[in-house]
Image (cartoon, rainbow, N blue to C red; front, side, top):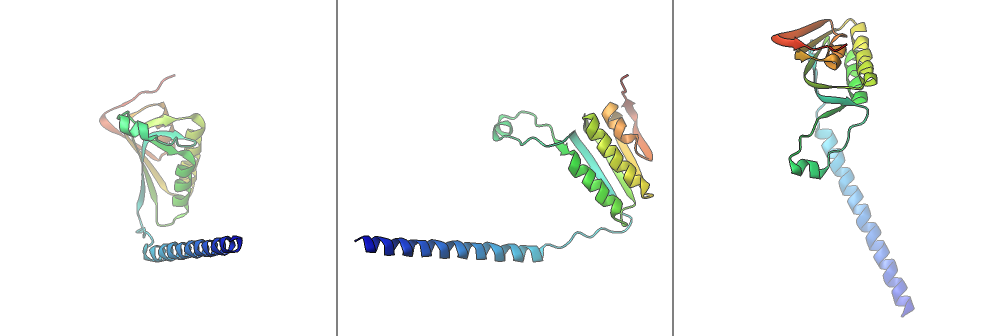
Amino acid sequence: MALLKRIWGLLVAIKDALALLALLLFFGALASILALQTPAAAIADGSALAIELDGVLVDQATPISALAMVSGDEIIPQTETAALVQLIDRAAADPSIPMLTLDLNRFLGGGLADLESVGAALDRFRGKDKRVEAWATAYTDDSYALAAHADWIGLSPQGTVLLRG
């Protein structure tokens, strides 16, 4: 009887290994097919990178809980500073992007270190002889701190600038 249990255990282990191998092969082939069908994004010469900052700049975004989504509480959007800096630096290195526009209408601010990091990235972008423009209906301390790194700052005729200090 013990011999039959061992043989049965060996057969189950072989079946499990073959099933796992088949799943790995299936998902590997599926990933390969999808990777081949995804076209690379083409950027036309003279394109402007439009960045619409929404919410706050943070070092690391807080995951949104399912309870917050269901409860109807307002969820404040977050932008990770490192990802934004990387985006600006990649655009600075791309010769087909001569300009960057910042839409700061829904920007709520960020910490001083975050603002300085993004400002430094904007300065590096401008250092490549590229243009930066900032737009907003109203500027606060944080949004104007980013706009100050731009070549041109746009403000609505009915807009406002509210600086403290």
